[in-house]
Length: 410
Image 1: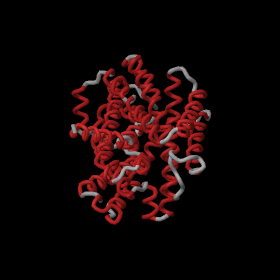
Image 2 (image 1 turned 120 degrees about the vertical axis):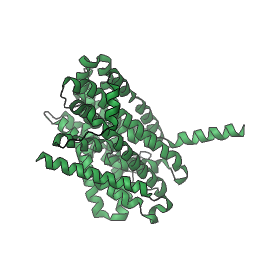
Image 3 (image 1 turned 60 degrees about the vertical axis):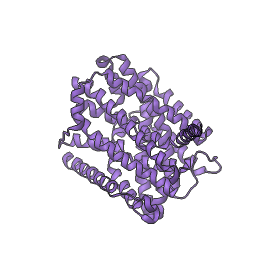
Image 4 (image 1 turned 135 degrees about the vertical axis):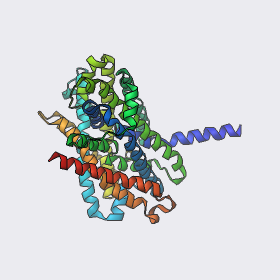
């Protein structure tokens, strides 16, 4: 009886800890991410699948470092950067992140507009309504309830698995392409590679995950369970990205269909893979966009407040954290309003924001590696040699791809 009781206590303790890793990784499959994976599959077919495996390994390493720093130091990444590198460096990092994140926020509302239009709902209704619902949702709920709803939203990403199977891909070719690299030196291919890296390991994720770990009160003692939360979340998000790419490669690339966003992908799937696959793709886009429209402004407000020592957190009242809620509100409204502007280049903003993430990623990783190898800060939880090798390899690879992209584009 005692053993059963202990097991139940272990399960309860585990359920209390999971959340930040799964939520952070899955929300990264947002409107910009879905658009990037869709275009990758439609324009380059299965030959681009191989990159998802090393990117997933890098994602696990980077997210694990963020979670470990949060659990050990009980401080957010922005706070640690300010304390270690000073206010000037922090200001420039935050400015770059703010610009990249605003593009991401606009992309989320563009995704809401696009998915709702597929179902016959005008963006003039869907976008303001979504912004209002997100604001009320964050304003009225505490962290624990918000986290539970976000975890439920992660389940609906399964729509992309179903749409991938509905596309009836050649699984032999898919599996071969997944492990055999196929590299090209043209600018469009390199641009897409940087976009995939940027959307899979987005810089904002490291700030949000670490802030979520701290806000949830996870410490060194609970970190072992939290580590699995991160790993499972990263693998789950990669599987979704994999199936989005497969669905578009098996249908759109095969038929020579060119697309510019996720809405195009959903509509093009209708005659090629059936209405069910098309509707699943559109529903997945709506779920992901609405989910991320709450997380992106929230994460941006978190790290800006952390960076400059202002109060932050959804468990605090507006009077306790006025700048946090003001930043969240301004980003939410500005992102929604931008989508409603006539002739605004939404698609360009969506894809460029992911490439901007990829360009900014090596900078953020450099700060993270410096921090996590500081034994005065991390003690025995500093990085191992293996973790450092993979982290530096990620920086070198992304930097090389970015340089290659720029050179071949000229």
